[in-house]
Length: 211
Image (cartoon, rainbow, N blue to C red; front, top):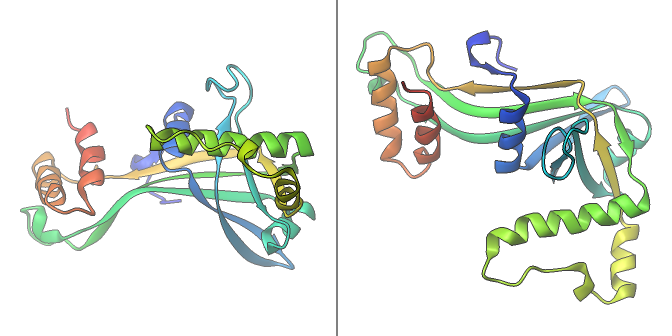
């Protein structure tokens, strides 16, 4: 987490929305005193979302049975999930002011806390929720359903998965978007990022901060 408080984001609604927009996370745990990591899509439940109005926020994901992170979580390791949103290199030439150095602007969310294993029914529901969530973006293609699988094949795949629920004890984010620079310098960065394919999304986030 970046130490500068001016970049910190603590509003749970904003953080949940950023997870929905960038749900593919790095999930880290500790095994034999060493940090290990895996990657997986994570969906938020509860916390005022339609899937659980008023319920405590939880983050659910699944991993392979053979994954080292799976074994660490089952052994009781807490987890840290890191979600990375738009990010881009920022050249000091774009500020229009002297004596600046290169930096990197980015948006991220961190969720850390204890993890519990979901039961079989919840794991199956999570698989359906994940496919429903991402298949919706592929319209007008019909939504893929697990019902399309042959039952024996589907059961074999389920046996290779373990699903978890993370209840964040720490839930915060970073929006490092040149808030420490004058408005004219931020405008120069936005203009330059707008002209690049990789920086377009970040420029849009920076523009939201402008009065």
